[in-house]
Image 1 (tube, rainbow, N blue to C red):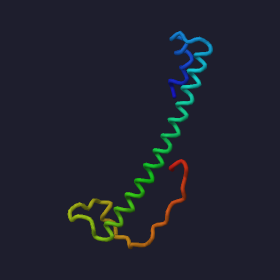
Image 2 (image 1 turned 180 degrees about the horizontal axis):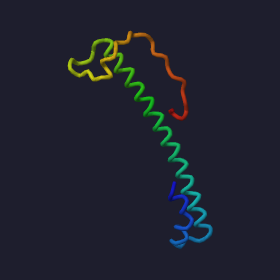
Image 3 (image 1 turned 90 degrees about the vertical axis):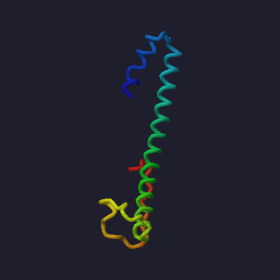
Image 4 (image 1 turned 45 degrees about the horizontal axis):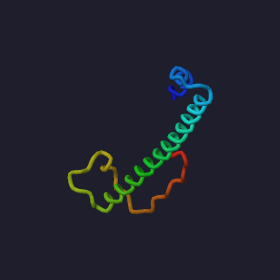
Length: 95
């Protein structure tokens, strides 16, 4: 985003004139908007995947499917029963 603040002066230094400079700034702004949206989607997918992996891990531990000697501090918590894990409300931001 720092680059966006100086984009107009950089375009001027590179010899872009009025219309081409405006078009370059608009294009850059559009691309940044798209990239931000993609980054948000990736963050949400990552968080959802981590939650799913946690649930798989706990299900495997509660069923005794983990290998001996692979426990870590997190696994040594009391075993949970196989009750239904409530789903979180879908949050568009992934937070």
